[in-house]
Length: 129
Image 1 (tube, rainbow, N blue to C red):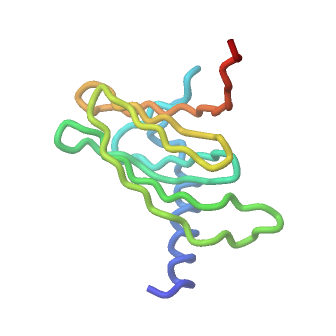
Image 2: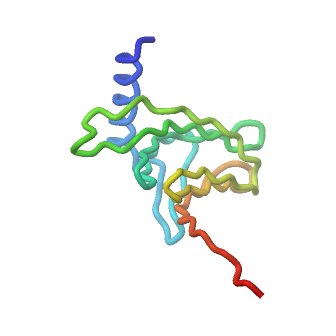
C-alpha cells in the first residue's frame, strides 16, 4: 500500500469513526462505557485516536489507530499508527502520549464492557527529608 493510500485509508477510517463515534459509547462521570465492536473516537492532547474493542477469549481486545490531531496548520495529518492490545477481564491498561495525556482502558468482568477514562499525568518529586 502506498503512503498516499495509507493516509487516505486512515483519513477515511477517522471520518467514519467521527461520524459514528458515539454509537456504542455512553458518557459518565469517569469517561466512556464502550460496547463491543462499536467505533469510538478520542482526543488525547495533540493526538487523535479511533478504534473499537471486541470480547475475545475472556479478554477485551482493543484496536486503536492513533495519529496527530487535525489542526489548521496540519490539514492532512501524518499516517497513524495501529495499536492492538489484549486486556484481561477485571484488569486495565494505560496508553500514554508524550504530552502527559493518557487513556485508561478497563475491561469489565466477562469482557462485556470496556470503560475508558482520560488521565492527566503530573510529574511529582518527593520532598527532601
